[in-house]
Amino acid sequence: METEAVNALALSGSTEAIDLSIWGLFWSAHWIVKWVIIILAFASVWCWTIIFAKTKKLRWLKKNGDRFEESFWSGGSLDDLYDQIGQRPDHPMAAVFSAAMREWRRSLSRRRAGSPMTGSVQERIDRVMHVTVAREMERLESYMTFLASVGSTAPFIGLFGTVWGIMNSFQSIAASKQTTLAVVAPGIAEALFATALGLVAAIPAVIAYNKISSDLNRYAGRLDAFSGEFSSILSRQIEETV
Image (cartoon, rainbow, N blue to C red; front, side, top):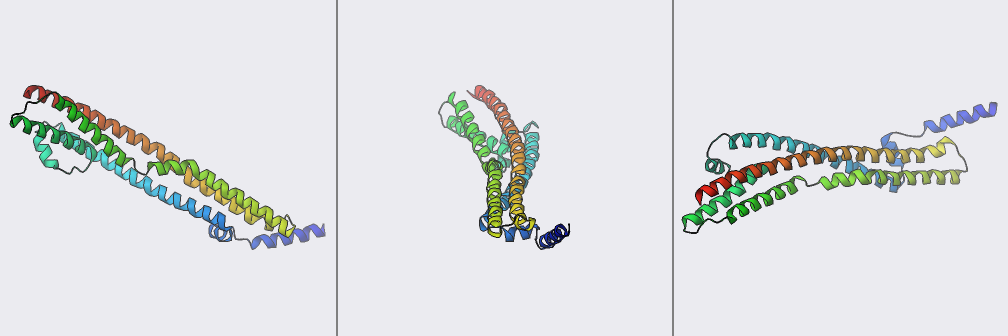
C-alpha cells in the first residue's frame, strides 16, 4: 500500500511538470507534428478569410442585383440605363445587360449603315450573355476549390499528425522503459491536438462550401433567368426593327 502511494505521488508530481496548453503542446511536439499543426492552422485561417469574403460578396450581389432589377423593370429607357451603367459594370447582372446592349447597338449601327439585320443577331446576343454569365460565375467561384480541398483533406492531415504523435509515445515508452502517464501524455496530447485541429479546419470548410455553393447556384439561376427575360425583350425589338 505504501509503495502504491509513493508511485502515485511520484506520478502526480511528474504530470504537473507537463505543459498541456496549446503553445506547450506545439513547442514540445515533434517537428513533423509542428508542420502538421502549422499547415492546418494556416488552412483554417485562410478558410475563414474566404468564408467571410464570400459571404460579404454574396450579400453585396443580392443588394445590387435587387437595385438593378428595380431600375430595369421600372419602365425607363434601356438605352438610358445602359448609358448610366457605362462600359464598366460593377456587378454580374449589370455586366450581362451591358454585354447584350453593346451587341444590340452594334447591330443597330450596322443597320443604319445599310446592312440588313438578320436573325443571327438574336443568336449573337444570346451567346454574348451566356459567355458573360459563365465568366462572371467563374470569377465568383474562385477559391471554392480550396474550401473543398481543406474539407476533404484536413482530417487526413490531422490523422497523419495523430499517428506520428502516437509513434512518439511508443518511442518514449521504449526509451524510458516505463508506461507512466508522464512518459505517454506528451505524445498522446500532441496526437489528439493534431486530430482536433484537423477537424476544426475541415468542419467549417465543408459547411461553408455547401452553403456558399448553394447560394452561388441560386445566383447563377437568377442570372440565367434575367438573361432569358432580357433576350425575349430584345427579340421583340428585333422583330419590330426588321
